[in-house]
Length: 352
Image (cartoon, helix red, strand yellow):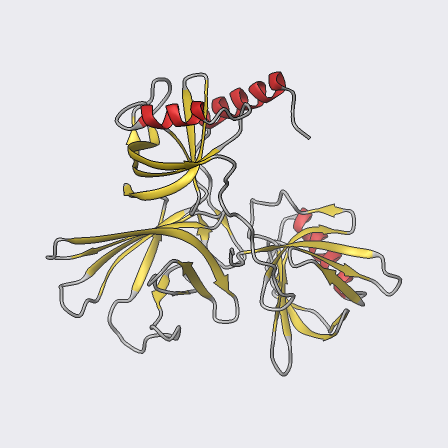
């Protein structure tokens, strides 16, 4: 249902105001064990140069930006895209051509994997250390959705999903004219392809922030949109973020580790789970839509009272699960009578 014009304008104005004032994003520890958003850095070995300086930015929504600088060579490669995690290998997968894979270590570091996706047997420094998010400047061709209203423009870059205000200089006029010429409804985005640079820049109002400078507009696609469909997840080998356990709503739990359930394949299938404090683990059995969990073992850390209550609810729930259903995005666990016991959402899965 389309909003009335006046309502659409109010929504966009609110969005622009909120975007201009949005605070720094706090780090949240995901099911994969990384605290994001973050920047990872290090100098890795190079066959024909002193080393390759890596700078990898990861955002919790699934976007990444990777810069590789070849020392003592006039060469720097930048690539942006989406990431997901292979839980069975505990590997971070960057969905971009020729982008390396990384093993997620227990200390939050990333270690380069070989071209076969397996660990590199070497004592050379192949690790990237985590730090607070410190994005590097990106200059390359990019595709995104542009919205213009009230002398302001917003650009959502398709690959990373990041949003940026657009500086009104250089190639901006051509972009604005193309938007107005498309005669779109208020607040409707225009899919554009352009050469641009994303870097920190002063704003007309408020503090400086990362912004898009348009160098050249290539073409526009009215009615087009970023491809954001997430691939349907399998029941096994997917991080399922816990949304609800009975009457308990976990969708807003962010102050601790991301609550999740993970089912791993194998001759003796195992599961692991947490509501944000202790780890739960054990065996499970599956036959079609039927599903059952064996006795639950737990670590014994002291937890806040609210998480103690959630852990009890989770353990009790797993003990009476008899079946499941899933559309590849939402998972429901059910009891013998078919009643929904808990709901989950797939996270860190590939995009189409």
